[in-house]
Every structure is written in C-alpha cells, then in structure tokens.
Length: 110
Image 1 (cartoon, rainbow, N blue to C red):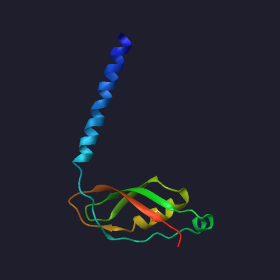
Image 2: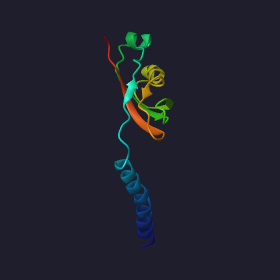
Image 3: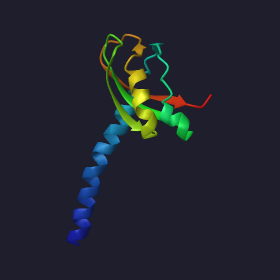
C-alpha cells in the first residue's frame, strides 16, 4: 500500500511541471524573422566524407536582433562548427525582449 501511495505522489508531482511547460510553450511568441542570413561554409572534411544533413541550433537573440549565444541541439559534429559560425552572424528582426529560437541549417553537396 505504501509503495502505491509513493508512486502516486511521485507521478502527481512530476505531472505538474510537465503540464505547465506545455502550456508555456503553447503561449510562446511568434518566430522572429531573419533579416540578414549568412550562408555557412561547407567544411572541406564534410565534402571529402560526403557528409550532409541538418544542424539544429538553439539561438538566444537579444532585443536588438543580434545573436547572443548558440547551442547545438543536433546534427553532424563535422557540420556544427560551420553552422554555429554562420548563425552567430545572422541578424533577426528587433523585438521587445530577448528570445530563444530554434533554427535549422541545411548542408547539401553541390
């Protein structure tokens, strides 16, 4: 009986934050548009290895539209550095406050 009660309490406590997080995301801001997009350099190593794909980055954007920081969320390690270097130079539309966006940078052989 005690195990069931502990499990029920643990489930109830863990469900609260999950629900709030989902609601906060649903009420989030609209995406900020990119005003100036710099294309990434396709790394020579990636070309030689025939590596292509998408790099997903979390980008913190200041109110003035400049990139404050980036964090890789996924993609080939061979491509992440180039994607990060390019996105740090992007300029977004100005906003009323700092925002966090998730962007994807595609690398395809030419």
